[in-house]
Length: 166
Image 1 (cartoon, rainbow, N blue to C red):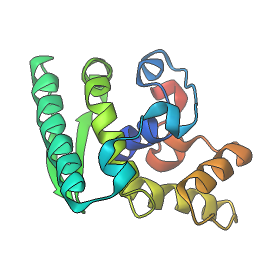
Image 2: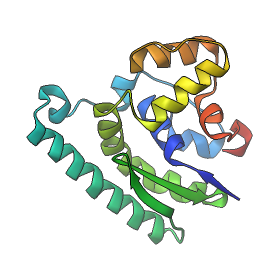
Image 3: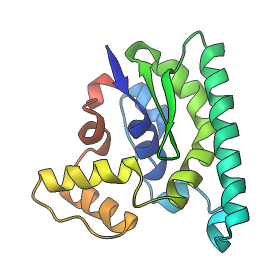
């Protein structure tokens, strides 16, 4: 069976969940600012800087995909959708993700945060809140604070992957 991992990966990075912790079944959270340092493109917001962030994101994704392949696995159906790389990973390939995703994490976080509120991850997190009859805040930080206050497991809610499956 194949699980969608784009949302998982983005949720882990955007909200400081430790990918390595997923391999052991534990999850640690930290503020998003600690998970992904601000890039120059996000700080000054110029379109030239945004292009650099996008180029870095695409290059980092290509390196991530090569790494997964070098681990004897593959990303299934990688596609750039709404400027975010979406892909699936066979369930048994958690080790390849743990080995390869950390190198992609910073670029993924920078890109996701630069395009934050409308990202697929944020849309999924807002749906999680709405499923609990909570009206989502209007900022990424606000949504994440609501997720934490409500005790919602973001990975499980957005992907259906439970802690014992990680």
